[in-house]
Length: 307
Image (cartoon, rainbow, N blue to C red; front, top):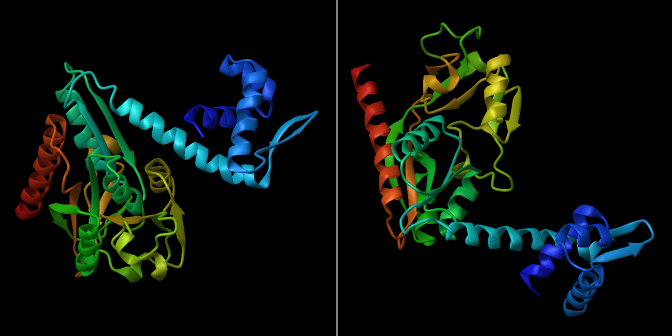
């Protein structure tokens, strides 16, 4: 099996036709058909059911195509990763959904506007952030660990030869819109939130407490909405009486002051930090990014102490 055969199979699946796939790939239809037939013989399965109406995936083909998508995606990633103009000008970041990380990343882009580079910032589920760092897909990951889960998460990371470096420790804050009925409350309690929709990020199959991005579980909430991206969260916060619980850090430049944070009465604390593989080679961009987020953390700590 080759990468090219996977690409061929994906294009046939996308177009639903051998002839259309051959046209888009600029190859002879006979070559495309022979390549797929050879792949099917090698794997011992039938990938496509051919008919006058085109080509559709068989049961085995539907399973194979998922693997093919992952193979081609990883291949593209490796190629793009090493296309950087010069050594040390690459930075790939995986993070939980934090506005201040996006803000720090923006500052890095601005500070390096005269440089050549290849950078990526991807917001993902907690497990995927850790997985990206483990397989060296990303140079660094950003996660938060609740105090009560720190020991078990630290062991989990150590088993994968990953280290956690804290940026700041925070107490839980409620994020809600400026016009929310509770917006003028100086400190909120859990029971005060029961009438409003609680927003939390999807964690896929990994629902253990130590993978939860928010500081509280959705079990207590009478109304619970699970979302997967920050844009949806922002829209719901801005347009409804929904709320979420997080660090209390949200740069006003990103929401124009329309979202506010209010302390939540709780003894819980959690640490936001970055993770890297123990054998990860440091690059200039990685060092600059870590400095940017550490400076941000120091600024937040200083503001908290002043209050």
